[in-house]
Amino acid sequence: EIVLTQSPATLSFSPGERATLSCRASQSISNFLAWYQHKPGQAPWLLIYDASNRATGVPARFSGSGSGTDFTLTISSLEPEDFAVYYCQHRSNWPPSITFGQGTRLEMK
Amino acid sequence: QVQLVQSGAEVKMPGASVRVSCKASGYTFTDYYIHWVRQAPGQGLEWMGRINPNIGGTNYAQSFQGRVTMTNDTSISTAYMELSRLKSDDTAVYYCARGAPSVYARVASPDYWGQGTLVTVSS
Image (tube, each protein chain N blue to C red):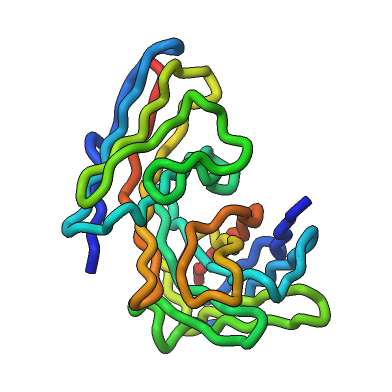
């Protein structure tokens, strides 16, 4: 079973700064990794799929990179609305399953 | 536009069952998988399984095998998730979400999500 580790659990930044979030897989998962933003009381929002592809409607300040076991979500210049919890997520075709990391909370400094 | 609208909050006793519905609109319901994901208070997201509405085929997470049943009614574009033998730690917000095209066996990261349904298990 693949385990996704997101560290640290909380990051503090100011608006306008660049934020880099990390996700590490317990074994190689190719590029089968996505990133979601989740705010309280809202549904999760797909930001990045297959490691580096922005989903429809996602601002260009969000970018994803990595392959194998190490992945990164970068927010180039934080906007006030970007402060939320971010989850990485692995999709497996066999057996069919989805696994989430435990999340990184991005808080305003 | 694609929308998934879920049923309202539920309060259940331990040992009971709950059924949450998810009505799809804005696309052809049978063309895409529906996934179910939950979030317990203060916890992260947990995948429960998925259903292919075209054929009714399901894949369940091992931790829910034997307790979860996913079904759908194509005539009303609605998917259902039933969880039985409820325990207090099943208290969570349950989400449905749209997955890969149903013609494929592969798994895709869900793109559109429902608003969530709070299920509270308490005596």
